[in-house]
Figure 1 (cartoon, rainbow, N blue to C red):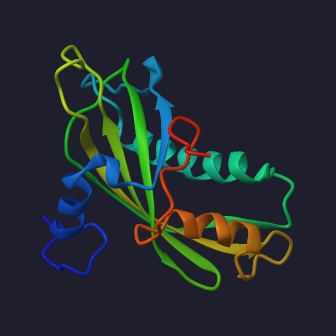
Figure 2 (figure 1 turned 180 degrees about the vertical axis):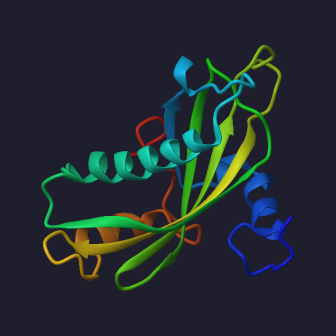
Length: 177
């Protein structure tokens, strides 16, 4: 448990994410693979980070038709963390919920939730947040590696994912546009 209420993975932050999985402005579907399970029969902890990374970058690339491999600027992970709340196993269609909690000049902070709405009793079970993540991207010039301002198109998209935004859910599965 994290006692500092200002920490991005504090009990208060986790409670906020758990209050309603649908509160994430962006919801991005992800699929587990057999190879994601570890020797204990559940998703290996490193896979959660891969799913978070896939959701963030997939959302930006898809919404903006942006190739992250050829862009002059790129978001690099400066900080990340995860609180594991429930086991997830293959095969589980999951959703990564994403919200922007801070939008700076060159950095963006995300709160992420790994939402499991499937299972043997999926018809009667409410979606649950299996993990809550914290992720910071700093945008850098690909050649110099120095921080740069978040490109205007990306900044505008990120603003739609702020919880205070009036924008509805965005993402391939639940996009309202």
